[in-house]
Length: 484
Ligand code: 5AD
Ligand code: SF4
Image 1 (cartoon, rainbow, N blue to C red):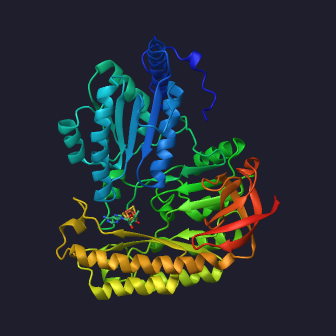
Image 2: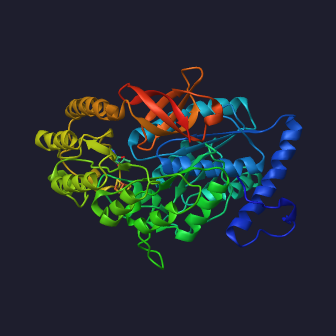
Image 3: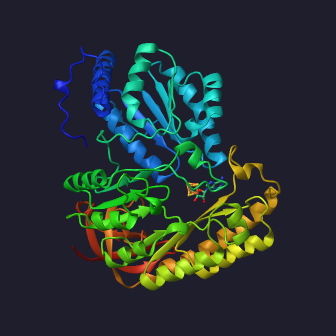
């Protein structure tokens, strides 16, 4: 989905331009010639595979990375037997890091068989100095390492790798720059993530994100609106506005704008049918936001509102800035204003010092709120965060037992709650052919619940009225009522 860049106009005899996006198109063109030559010699196209770990932010970054790779001339594949393999990593929990190291061992065996293969690593894990050190020392077959602040530079780094013929490492700390207008290859033609801000200033005591993604930086509203307008012109009907904490959007702009104001502007874009956003910190969810959500039919009836723990004492230790009571009051207020809202959450079990009583407070929040779904995590100690130095780390078997109890209850409630719309007609955005049932499509309701229904693939990307015949716990089976 590239915007009219005329590559013929790029003069490669000149030094690279100063302006960042022009500079990157210059390097894209340089790499393009290299890839073309290589592929002519091999008598086949060069293939690129990107593997994404972690959150929606990473998925969006991967679309940008793939956009650059496709411009360079690589063809996309999801097979790691490729000429260029890129891992976009996550480091929120220790397990994510372990998985990457494990898979790198496997990539090394593939690389021994294919001398043309290049391996690139980027994302949050690369923002950690110890990780980069380990890769330099023990994973010397890796070709390019870069972080979260300079993904727009992929072509330049790749070109350096072609020229220098040794590992290129380029990781920035705390970069402020936001580079607009580079190519993007969307996974779905009809829906897209849109970054509205980067980084996080909250410093929850267990979380590594502020250290790896840096301080909060908001994009200017006119850049966001411009991007969404172009996406809509290109067939997008649903956007997901992305930020670690969208509620603090715009506070640091030269002309401050609130998230509620941004949402109002986005909801006026003609042709855009659905707006989602993620994630909202309960600490600063404003009344204005609730009002805008309640009044705009385009904004999906779904809020992801991570509670993390139900114990006010633990919440304080987590540096979350709200108590159990304040959280429950907020939920009440939201439900009064938007009765059909679907609520989801994140919960951490086994934070240092968590007692059985603390855990029961979390179970109590789960009982009271009755979430549509909850992502449950076992606390993972992240070096460099304040919680990593706390005493009273909870023994593994105790955590595991609590985790199992929580998960069971969350799933039971979820199955009851998710079925509440059975025997009604709901708007469903048809997303893809059903992977199990021939002739069926899979789509999503406005509140994010999945629906399977018989339908033709021509409906993909369109919103259809679907009668929900049967609830199967976390999803519905339905049939077309009519197409809008
Ligand atoms: N351990 C476990 N879960 C974590 N999360 C963030 N940091 C940690 C950690 N150290 C969870 C939080 C957050 C979600 C994205 O990941 O619940 O909301
Ligand atoms: Fe991490 Fe807290 Fe920021 Fe979320 S709000 S990214 S949990 S520090």
